[in-house]
Structure formats: C-alpha cells, structure tokens
Length: 352
Image (tube, rainbow, N blue to C red; front, side):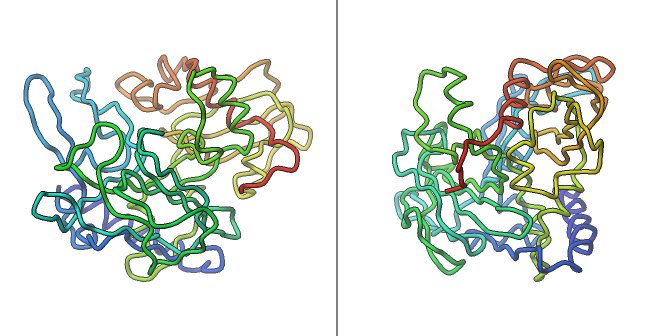
C-alpha cells in the first residue's frame, strides 16, 4: 500500500509537471463518481477488490481493481507474478440501499459526445456500457464506463461532467452485488476498419458494438491521468502516450500509412523517406507509443526487440509475444493484433 502511494506521488509530480506548458493540447479530467479516496491516498477505499485463491489461500485484494497485470497469480522462478491484464480500473460504490444495491451515479470524466451505448447486459462482458468521445488536437480520447445498472444517455448526446450517464452496478460477466463497481477505461481507437478485422477472426458471434467494441479500444492507466488533473493540471495525451515505456517493438511490411497514425499523428516518428516497413513500439498492454518508417524490409511481422523479464514474455504482453527477450516471437494472438493496428481504414470512413 505504501508503495502504491509513493507511485502516485511520483506520477503526480513528474508527469503533471511535464504537461503544464501545453494546455492547448490537453484535457482536464475528473473522477466519474463521488468516490474520491484515490485523491486521499486510500486506494483500499477506491478500488473494488477481486476474489482470489492462490495456492489454496483465499483473499480479497483491492490491488486487483487497478489497471495492469493485477490478476491470476502464477508462481515463477522470480516468485508469484500476476499474469492477467485488467484493462481499466474498478471504482467502489459509496452508497447502497437496504438490499445492498449500489446507488452511486456515474458522470463523464470530461465533456464530450456519447458515441456508443450498450444497454443489453448480455451483449458483452462489459454488461451495460457507455463510450464517450473527447475531441483533442492530438486526436480523440475515449472514455468507457462499464457494468452499469442503467444508462441515462444515447449516442449523439453532448455531455459534460455535470451530466449523469448512468448508475453504478454489476451487469456483465463475473460480478455480483457485493462487488458492484464502475469499470473505467481511457482509450485510443485502433482502427476504423475494425469490422473487417473482426469478420476475419470468425468468432461465431456478431459484433454488436461497431468500432467501439472493447477489442478496438486500447486503454492506458486512468489513474495516471486522474492524478495529473487532481490539482487542476491538464492532461496532455500526446506527451503521456509518447512517454510510456515500450515492452516490445514489431517490424511490419509497409502497406501504407496505418489508420491509427492518421488519427493520432503524434505517433509518427522520423524515419526513412522511402520505408519498406514500419517499426511499432508497444507497451506491455499493447498501447502503441510510436510508428517509425524503416528502410529495413521484412516479409511478415516480426518482433525485433523485447524488454527482458525473469519469466515468460507471455506474462507481460497479454499473450502476444512468446519466447525469451533474445528470441521473441509473435503468437497467433499477437499477429492478429498487429494486423488490426496496420490495416488501412475503409474509404470515406469516420469515427462516428
């Protein structure tokens, strides 16, 4: 717990200071509910716990409600390692009725436009969820609010932080009343040609969410952004994403400018004027931090570097890279993900 507080302090001072000079490219974010324990250094009162059984011992760690590799412990030569990636943060309710049902209302983290509302809790593991688009000069930022008990908005609505978009709940997979929470993600949109990629996977279930399917939204840590904005410092999307540490880099054949680079120009780095390939640097969770045109040819996507770990690369790449850091290889899941990142957008496409 103490280490978590130290991390928050470092984030608040270091990253916030770097963002202060560029308010024109920034956004001020707020908490989505009345629960402000994050800002009071009480993470145990902010994050909803997970039920965990590891080596026969049951526990309810609040750490499982954080963003990142926080779930499913596996014992390795380096000790227990959490291997399952959690795409957002789970925020506890503050109020419940006599039956234990949560009463907290959910608000947008910033002003924006509602682009997707999924009101049928059976349509995804998110249960009822809402996606809001926030327009920035650096490219669109998306906030996602999941497991809602009800929604109070529709696509096209222009909303601000004073609006209510739904009620905190426990709709979706694997959640009961006791563990009711709002799952918050802050995301980049990967590809407007998502449907073509989805159809190619032949999953056997229809995509009911268009381009705002969770598979097409790459989330970063909401705590970072919220802590930056805690004292009124705006969050700068391009500075933050560009400063994230890459876990691995993939070289892919050049088939034209990736759709994501067109939407987020800050991801494009200086490189070859006549590129044969793209070198894409990605975080452990798969957030692209840079696309660099390269003169090096390749016949298919390959991993050209990976940060070493004393355990499998699978455990720090969402199962997209296997092998050692000296000989990393894309898994089938990794190849599929890179294809999504590099597919061209459909003609006359938009983010609507």
